[in-house]
Length: 112
Image (cartoon, rainbow, N blue to C red; front, side):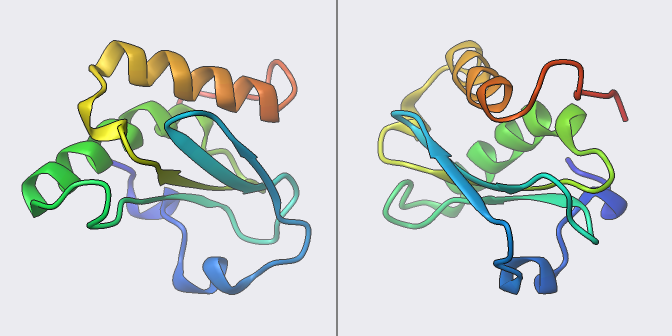
């Protein structure tokens, strides 16, 4: 789980200046490279997983993958797409890591 310091506050969702988007088959990502606030957020709708238990499991898995990428001055918002709930963790990690590496220059991942 992302610590409180690494979570994106509500104001971060409303900030649209410099927002970039990229997507893969199972995830779409919106991000800001240089932001006054920093943090990460995961959005999983009922359309993706009907049961709250399944939505929360998917959110926890994505947050575990996202945690090392949340550094200061960076905002990352991950949206799950249809089919993401059925992915095993290893495939999910591979796809999200590829998406994050594509969006950020090499050497910008830090362990928190």
